[in-house]
Length: 126
Image 1 (cartoon, rainbow, N blue to C red):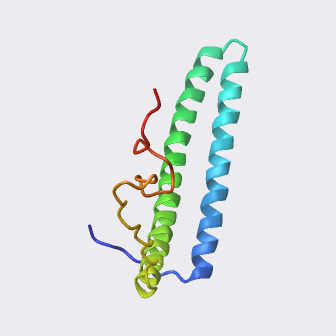
Image 2 (image 1 turned 180 degrees about the vertical axis):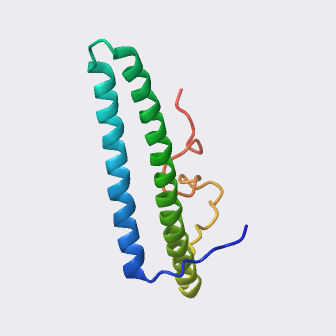
């Protein structure tokens, strides 16, 4: 996969993101208004307008999907950049220390499981 970088500076990226979000909100609003009109129409041209509103809402939804996909691609690029930066930071930091090892249990010890708990090593009473 070829990685693409944006020629935009941070201010332009922020402005683009805000514009995409506004357009997406307007398109979603338009689909809701179109569907509401679709279901509340009455009159002699009901059928024709009903079908035209269906076509309009379908076209607006396609455009809304396109805008949402562009915004998603933009945020994925930012998230990828963030993840790469975090990986580089983790590579520079020393890893966590290994937990201390427990000594092996001693035969005949009441704590034969090695955790300080009495285990089945204790004889059963009859």
